[in-house]
View 1 (cartoon, rainbow, N blue to C red):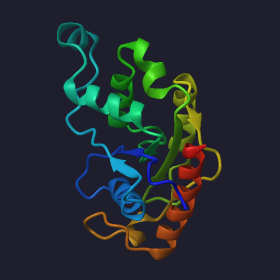
View 2 (view 1 turned 90 degrees about the horizontal axis):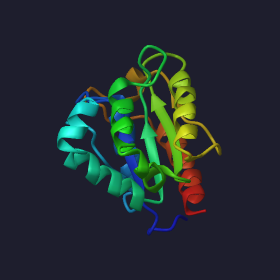
View 3 (view 1 turned 120 degrees about the vertical axis):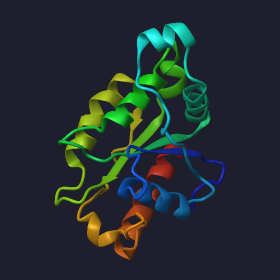
Length: 185
């Protein structure tokens, strides 16, 4: 059983109200309510160095940076858009690295897991692979103890984006048990 003092920040890379990936993150938080905290990225502006120079790091971004820095781990629930990382999620991570002196505090040696769900037949394998170079650059500690790529989302989630499939829920539970143990490490 996992330590209830372990905190995992979970971020969904989709802004859609009935997002399958947001639904997968909600299911994760429901399975481990004492450990997983959902952190929204809606409202983070497009990264613009002029905006940063003029106004500094947005308050929402600073709060998320502090939340991740204080957490035991980070769970990225990433859709796959056009065989790659979703722009809105990458934009959030780009803001989280500003100023660059904060990268080590926020991401350095941070346990990170990437999971995702898609309507197609391959899950999110290409997006998950694409995240690896970003995670390496940020000097995180990626979790390689398992993979969770959920395919065929339309059969597994309802119209509101809520996970309905018990087999997927059990796969999620098993994955998260391993990741939480890794983050406690």
